[in-house]
Image (tube, rainbow, N blue to C red; front, side, top):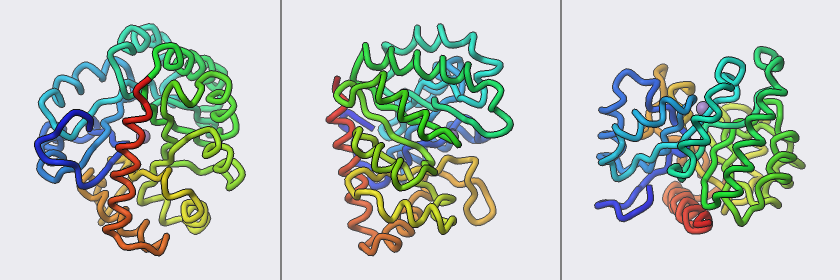
Length: 257
Ligand code: MN
């Protein structure tokens, strides 16, 4: 996503689980062919190395180092491994908090892990984070405000479902939002996304967890989300696409540490 790709990106998928598709390697080639700047998130630090190896020669795919909050109950012991890789990772995710009924029991452990990762990112600087915040937006923002000064890294809130007041709080602290097709199917979330500042918007698929045409969404399908977002916000698809690409460039410039 950074550097000088032979062809510039045309689309942005800032949160996709490429390693959960059967055709992981083919998907990377597809991202390059279709010029989709794609952030491949991982759910455990062990997955990061293999993802990096596969994407090593890709112009458009970058890999994020993650420890998914839904896996913290079983995988908290992998936190030292994440910390070991972190100095070599510019992108961090999927990380965050999940207070949904299935994961609430591990919430104290999730908070420990999340705070430790934020603190390490603040020390090292220059990171770009993609953050999960299911039923925990207030807690997420509290941790970020305490641990990660905006000038030390950039935070992208993935699949944000907080209130308008929480969105304003996140904007005030420099956060961005990556919007997916499923969010735009919910009237409540459409209204929220419609009110976000244009200069804080990115797109994502969260594939394979979000479907499109009855199949898991692929990074190249993100153009549909750009078109939907443009319609919602009353701008042309072309302008929406340019805004999102400009926002990605801004994030990567700002997050130089
Ligand atoms: Mn995800």
